[in-house]
Length: 622
Image (tube, rainbow, N blue to C red; front, side):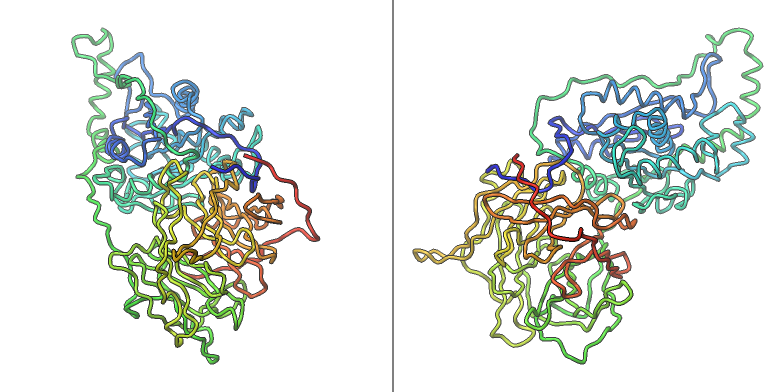
């Protein structure tokens, strides 16, 4: 790959080892609860870089041996600390996934590390994912649990609502992890994603979500949420998405790790004949509580039949057979129609200037799973919200079986009009250009380019990218979008668009050799948009809590990019990173911060850029 000056160089480390996936079970559970997910991970060739690690700790209703105690959450957190130092010590990057009480263990571990001034040691944790974690406690069978277990189970105390120690840890994690902006002795920014079970009656949605902003729900109850029975089960697909987003280096298969025997269970029943003498009274006490304990166990441990994943639905708009981003000229009478398309959960939203000779405002586009698309005219920004104008029309017809995730928009031929690009993970590129001479509604994406537009991606790339990693943006300011491979680690490679040619009777779209423009690992989402109006797309880093930092592109070219770090341009908004885009929706030539929420509403904020002319900070190489 061609080495070049880099966008957004800064602090960061590159780890060459696999990603350590640390799995932390819940109350009265064990490592076996993770087997369905571990089997799916092992069978997925795209996740070969993941090394699952099952952390086990002692848990149960009551100790069955007089010389054993059930450890407190603090003690288990200390055990996790040692586990991460020893068993997981070889991994440069970790992702923690927890179930139920395991989330309290992870939170307590983070809080205790920060309290001890060891925040910098947490930097290798790339994300914490908590499934059905009772962050605010569980009220199910609360009085029964108190009577049956009393003070003999310190773990049960932390499962109660408003438990002091659990609340203190939660407060620390929200303040010094979720909302942290720098790695220090007392703070460490780590993305935290929390999920409630759709049918969970053990941990309520309010408790599972608590004060975390990146929150959602997954199919199943408190236990079947983990019983992923197919690669399409949403718990697995969600975890897979987080794993891929955390990856910092292409996966290169290495030697198989040595098999490690599974540790024995923390508690085993001692045969009656081996029970120490003089302990009959303890047995009587336990037997007297048997009915209550059985009821608690039935609620907290035994799971129903596996939840079958049947979620294959998607919302399609029936108002247009072609569903589309349009190319008609806007009617001057059109005003804000107040029309909101389906939510981003089922449709991809894009923004493009469809009529740049009339105004420079980006219109709103929606693409469904079949690559059919529609558009709404820009109704203007009012009170911080982008309004939907009238609905446009077009006759774009995707190929049979087309994937909506493969469609991109941008001016690829430099005529100022938007074109449609259908991408492929191998670099294959199908281009549909604007036909200006056609009637309104028959212009956008109506002429398929019959030459070779493919990008020589696999000639130098060391893995096949996911479709979502492919973006288009004008990096060099020549009015034509360039081809970008934006890896989950935030590394960026650009193939510069050299234009269409018909030399020697061979029609083709020429691309430059690949140029690495950013090598720093942030493990955050990147966007590219022109923030300062100089015609070149700038690099924008989305923070875990919905803010943005940026590097201005002062003189991007194939030979290198001079950029300057202008740091924060939008403070944290609490918006999920995947719902954030940048586009010029007010026609001033500069992109705005857009949050497209799950209702389809679009909130608009002006990025705050430093005043005055900024000088290049100088290139920095790979």
